[in-house]
Amino acid sequence: MLRGAEAARRATAAPAPEAPTDLSTRDRVTRLLLEQGAATAGQLGSALGLSPAAIRRHLDAMLADGDVVAREQTVRGSRGRGRPAKVFLLTDAARGRCGTHHYDNMATAALRWIARNGGPDAVEAFAADQVAALEARCRAAMEDAGDDPLARSEALAGALTAEGYAANASTIASGGQLCQHHCPVAHVAAEFPQLCEAETAVISRLVGTHVQRLATIAHGDGVCTTHIPAQPRAQSGNTVTTVRTDR
Image (spheres, rainbow, N blue to C red):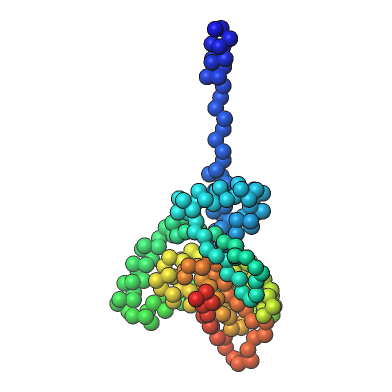
């Protein structure tokens, strides 16, 4: 009896095991998706050092809580056999909790008022005015980038990252690609695409050639993607083209 009582006492006194650090891991997953826009379970697991089973457990929990959505990975060109991998993206609610959309409702209301009282031209003028200061700061940061559009896109990516856009530039077969993994006005731009158009015009002027906006966070894509052709067109001035490739 004494031995049984002693065992019970020790079991009661023993400290409970620490809870798993799910919240910390989910924060890291959220941060990665905010920076990268979209990623497969394998990519997330590799980046975080987690096994496939572990990362899927976290993703399943985030899916159940409405923090992420899963979509089929878009594969351009020929692809091998089998189903394409799923990519995971943050939901609007999860992005909002990252502290990026505190003033969306007020900004949207203000733009609605401008549109109602001044018309589309007033909205375009407002959007151009809003990005003017950003353009000036980025141009100053790119002062030593030279004239090559691809080199300038790399410098622009660094300048935009300093502004909070989490941007990067890469070289592809047809030229260059500028990706912005964060958009501070995504919710507002979903209703007022003039904001995206004004930003695209800024990118065109800063890199020194026409550009093609292929995808935007405001339209539900994981990343704002802008294509920068390798060779600028001969005509004077810059041409901005917006192309949707996910339809």
